[in-house]
Amino acid sequence: MAKMHTPAMERIERKNAKRKKPVNSTPAYESWKRFKRNPTALIGLVVVIILILIAIFAPLIAPYDYQAQDYTAMMQAPSSAHWFGTDQFGRDIFSRCIYGARYSLLIALFCTIAALFSGGLLGIIAGYFGGRVDTVIMRIMDIFQAIPMIMMAMCIVAVLGNGIPQLVAAIMFASMPTMARNNRAAILRVRGADYIESSEAIGVGQVQMILKHMIPNAVGVMIIYFVGFLAVSIMMMSSMSYIGVGLAAPTPEWGLILNDGKSYMTTAPYMMLFPALMIMITCFAFNLMGDGLRDAFDPRLK
Amino acid sequence: MVKYIIKRLLLLIPIILGVSAIIFTLKTLTPGDPARQILGNDATEEQIQAKRDELGLNDPAIVQYFRYIGGIVHGDFGKSYRTGEPVISEILPRLGTSAIITLGAVAIGAFVGVLLGILSALKKYTWVDSLVLVISMFFQSVPEFVVALVLIMIFAVNLHVLPATGIDSIKGYILPMATIGLASVANYTRITRSSMLEVLSEDYIRTARAKGQTEGNITFHHALRNAMIPVAQSIGTNIGNSIGGGMVIETVFGIPGVGKYIVDSITQRNYPSVLGGALIIAIVLTVINLIVDVSFVMIDPRLKTTIISGSSKKAPKKAAA
Image 1 (cartoon, rainbow over the protein chains, first blue to last red):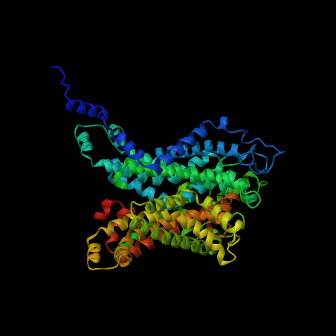
Image 2 (tube, rainbow over the protein chains, first blue to last red; image 1 turned 45 degrees about the horizontal axis):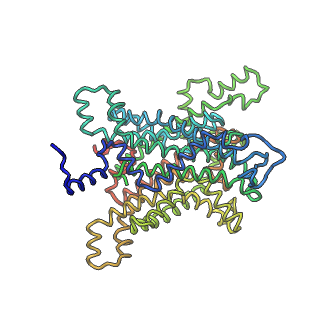
Image 3 (cartoon, chains in turn red, cyan; image 1 turned 90 degrees about the vertical axis):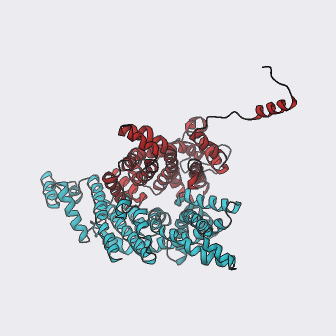
């Protein structure tokens, strides 16, 4: 049949052309739509992306080597040659801060992944099996939690010594109980769902059940904790390095750079200002993003 | 009630045993042979073996662990390598200082947090609400020592109104307390806000409004009192966080508390002091949590179930039984 060309039909067609095509909406897309509407979360995301780019391209951005000492330019205030000034060894603080992004983010990522594979896994197992397994695992986690997190991490570093692997191990053990608790809660929320029951009824294996049915459905909540934990790791790492119980010099970690500038607080405050700003911006950005993710993945929690 | 307290007291035992097991494990991992540390480098292999036998270091780990527990029961948390004094007698006088800092911090955090929480609940979904949340989140997300440094820069270096380090005068307590307190503001703000929002939509608030109560009276007498229950419950967790924060902050401000003692001991490689101190803190903290929980149950017996299952001191299943 030939198409009718009445004015009314044209109007309707024009309207339809303007309309967006219906998309096959997925939970991830719905979450992204909610995340997008949240300005503070977007700011956090942008800052985090910038920081990741800085970390990746650190050698290209940093004008100097982070440990090159220049005795002709010691303790200089910020200038066009040294944007953030130089420290007592003539090292360029801007370069150190840039490389600091690489170290801080990478170590935080290691810590969080390690915590996810230890505490997170225990939490998932506890949540899935429930009953006695759950009780035993969670009671052990209670014991770990009786020691304040940062004290636990410091004790482990005290015993193992300063260094990146030791620090990762320390933060991993210290954060295990929190990670376990969060992931257990995430699993418990999907545990009672009808689709889990029906998968059980058709005889899905336990490993497949956890990997294919439960984790994908709980992944939103898990991502929230993951991002939040990156911020916590950076906070713990820099706090520990600052008081001298974490990484060893000359690693350009922000807490350590602050520690270097400690003695010159009154005479050269810029030595502390910039690394402090880097820590503040990074932690705040991760938290803003994490908060946005929470609202996006889990509107009920708001 | 008595039954509940006894139950909770019994639950302390496995936690303290477990914590001491963790500390004992760390102790066995410490580098260096204690026997060699005592005898010095000149000692012969036989002398060291003899000393090891004397100290019981050649016994199986489990025997050593029970000996360690036995020592703890008698108040023996090890001896400091540096001074040779028992760790407990070095830490006890410092506990008071740390307790004052922690309590002050919790008080500041709770006061500011609750006020901000009420404000953002009353002005919900306005710019005031968002601003309060962003500011309180800022203090939560920035490491405490950075906040401490900024406060020192402002109030000690530039304005010269408060001392940067030490607690020689009462003024010295202000900055450390404020630093630790500010970090917990966000927590209280969030809990107060959501709890207030919930309470404000209750029927009895509408009744109060209907009978012509003033808004101030409704907020502070009818709503806040009921909204405070979850806030009060979170104080226990918060004390733990504040003690953890105190470890770093005491070092930043040079305050002679337990935190600084432990951090100093770490840098001096004084392992018995570090691990003994950590164990003492963990025990103190567990007891504080118990006291907080029990006192809230005394105030409001309905909490008995929520505290047991909620803060997961016990599995929900057992709470129902």
